[in-house]
Image (spheres, rainbow, N blue to C red):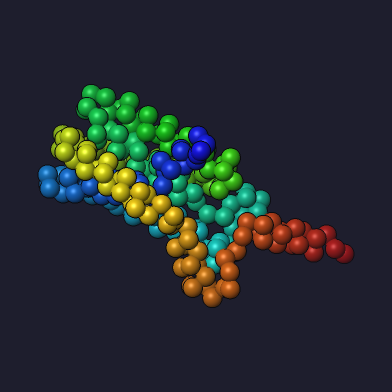
Length: 210
């Protein structure tokens, strides 16, 4: 039976969050609003930053042993960027502020869940949550009346979010990133976190050796 940490981690899965967000962006486009363009831009920037940081480490071993950093946590970043906006759009307007605050707290819990699962370090989840929170705040600054999801749009967003994890339960974005990193770098296999710390220890020994 999945633990609480596993269940929270599932709520930060890009396969769940991105399709739901795309449905609400379509809603914004059909209503000729602009808030969804800010959101789309922010999600693209976050995705690029997360991907670049992961490729740098998995393909070339670029990271920080001191900070135990191997790349920005995608779960933390996407959760903080999507949940506050999604809840603010789907709940009544008068409760939008509380909904967005609740979304940030939920994203923080999702980010923390990656620690006991040994998926990320503190530096990785913190940087991800801060990055996503900034994106959500910038998006929420200019929500307008067109950003209210009707029951039909809400149902479509929930269905889209549940579809990918249900149909492809074993597929993960991490596997795709690993393949891309090794293909770009030409490495036989992706770098592991342990290699980062071993490299740091080796460098320290060389510096101490007379």
